[in-house]
Every structure is written in structure tokens, then in C-alpha cells.
Amino acid sequence: MSSDDDRKRVTLHDVRRWVAAGQRFPMLSCYDATTASWVWQGGIDFLLVGDTAARFILGHDSTLPAPVPFMMELTAAVRRGAPNALIMADMPFGSYQCGQDDAMRHAASFLTDGAADMVKIEVDTSFEPLVRRMSSAGIPVVAHLGSRPQHKRLLGPSSRVIYRSDKQVAETIETSRCMVESGAVMLLLEAVPDEVSAGVVDAVSAAGPGRTAVPVIGCGAGPSCHGHVVVLHDLLGLTDWQPPFAPPLADLGAQIRQAASDWGDQVRGGRYLRDDHPYKVGS
Figure (cartoon, rainbow, N blue to C red):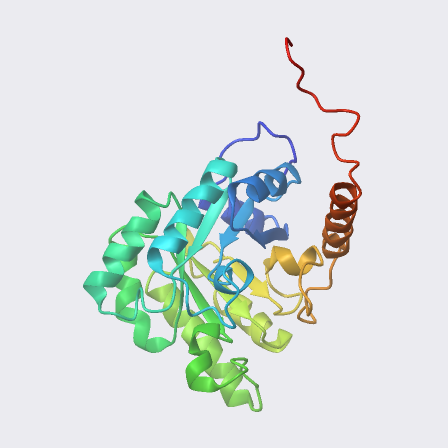
């Protein structure tokens, strides 16, 4: 994975190739064209337009209030900012739990109007028919297992699954196998122990097309995953609290605060454009 700006369009085939070569791959969430361009220039080939935008862009307390048109517009914006990146779009709450016909229309729109390469949905085994139908229609589906934030209203303030028994571990592994057999091209595991991730990776290691390994992405899911994703805002130090698996690598929040303070001082003190206004009469 090169950081050259002229590198070719990244595809699902590339991800499978990375997995086959034992090459771990990074992934970041992204919500706008400008940031997508910088992240791409930083060598990140794979971007997630996550429903976490409801929290980090709109200021909600959960991922639930992320309407389809809003997510579609963000996905298209990220594509414009990083035309050659591989882009995964989150299907927001209510967009695929609404019946298969509507779910299919929404998923297809993410690929056409949103220009995404694949869609992600939070699943259990009851979604097997939908995953199978999407896959049969040519829609690449990523199955999201483990903790499922879209279940926050049902599960309470924390949607994280606490694994207390081998039976729970086995159920997640079996669900992952079911999703792959139904046509899921990739799995995303959120906030699960590494024992779960290792079991899932083993279960789908030769279950994909042509008996190739199905890529498994971790979001706080331990080192066994093929790739890893975190929320960019957490990584940049833009949030008041970061999950324990996403320690910040920068402190942009403090830099933005300081820049805003300096700007305010310039204006209030009458120094802004006092001696260096760029526009003059006659020039």
C-alpha cells in the first residue's frame, strides 16, 4: 500500500490479496471530501463512511439518527475526496430492517448514487436471507458482528457484548460462517475478545470465492484480525473520550482550540488586516 497520490483504484480483490499475503491493512472512518483526500495521501486505501457520523458530525448521543440521504451524501463526498480509495458505506438504522425490497433499494443506491464499493449491515442469523439476496444481486455486503451500536435502544447505554461463556464465542463464530456462506464478502468484528476474532478468522480462512480467505476487520477486536478500523476523530484527539482500543496519535483538538483563541485575539485586538490587507484601490 503506497502513499503515492497516483496509485490505482483499490478494489475488493486487493484486500483479498493483502489477506492472502499476510499483510495487515489499516482502515479509517471518514465523513467529508477534504479529510478523505488527506487520509488517502497519508496512505490509507480503505475508508469507512460510518453511521458514527450521527455522533461526530451531527452531535447526537448515538449512531441511530443518521438518515439515508445524509449518509448517501457523505459517502459521495468521501468518494469525491478520495476517488481511488476502497469505500465501505454503513447502512444506517432503519435502512435495511424495513423489509427486503426497501433494503435492496437502499443498498443499491449506496453503490450507485453514493459511489460506495460495498455496504455494511449489523447482523445476526436472521439476516441470512437478506445477505444472500444482496449478494445474488451483485451488492458486496460486509457483515458486522459482535457489539452492534444500532441496538443501543434495546440493549441500553452500552451495546457491547460481554462474552461470559464458550457458547457465546461459538455462536459468533457460527454466525460469521453463516454470513460468509450467504455471500458476505467481508466481516467486521466490534469490541470482542481476541479469542472470538481468532475463531472467526479460522472459521472463514478458506471459505470465500475460490476458497480464498474472507477478510476480517477488527474494531477493537484484537490482533488476530486481518485489518483494523478506528474512528478518525478518536485518532486525531478530537473527542473528549476515546475507546480503549483507539488511543489518539495526535492532539488536533487542542490545536484547533488554540487557533480559535489566537484568531479571536487578532480580531478583538484590532490587528487582523490592519497592516496587510491584500486588496487596494487600483490593484
